[in-house]
Image 1 (cartoon, one colour):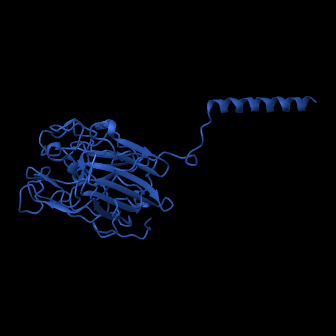
Image 2: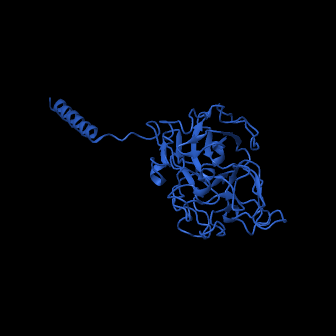
Image 3: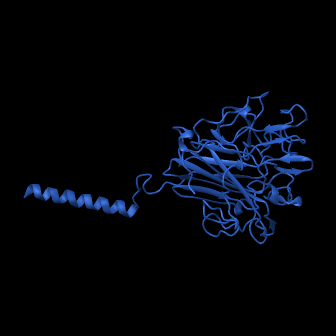
Length: 348
């Protein structure tokens, strides 16, 4: 199902589910955990399979880019049970696991479709030790200049836009936002109730990072184990701090969501796996958007797991072909022969 450019901003769960009753991601044509060739092998993260950075797989072509990290995290989060795994492992790290992030051009390159697969409920988040963490929003570096990452103290170099992933309000000792008492009724409350849409990322006050307040436990702002790799995480929605963000008019964002019980796979409980699929107009990213440099980023709110889906890979029609060395030699020999033939004709 390819969506048209006439879409309007929707609300979570308002559209068709992107996953069918058998667990197939219908638009993308693959089934997580069973896939063996299109988007990773999904067999990582549990013995005897590899864990950590070596288990995270990426790929791209001229229309699609993706990253898959089932039961694996690219950083070794402080205090985690296990090495480079979603945390807290002792209570089922699967519920804190971001497993897939991909993006692709559709509808004649006029729209972008983004796919996220996660163990985190996009509305309720995950609670642990009386605290609630959420899945985060999808951040977009439209021109590929986010190599320096994000630092909550220095601003947010590189990231230009954000796609909201859900609407929630944490009122139970939210770990990341002790000063954002948006509801006025509870310490550590954090409203995230802006409409589903695409937003400009205008300044540091509009974005939360995983270690903004040191509320996740051992990491503090600037902690090299968390910052800058996992950040940014979510848009800030607090009128007292930055004003409620407003989605970009004409972006045409639609978000389809669904969940599926995949059972126990590779030793992990994959029931309640969530699938989110956004579709929006390429034109909303502006003239600086470069699909062969862009980076899409999704981070757990607590910072223990993140995925980056990088640039597309240019195809043969996207850039001038580069001749092989042997071909260059043959071309040179041919030109030399042609020159000699012309000289003989002039002297004849």
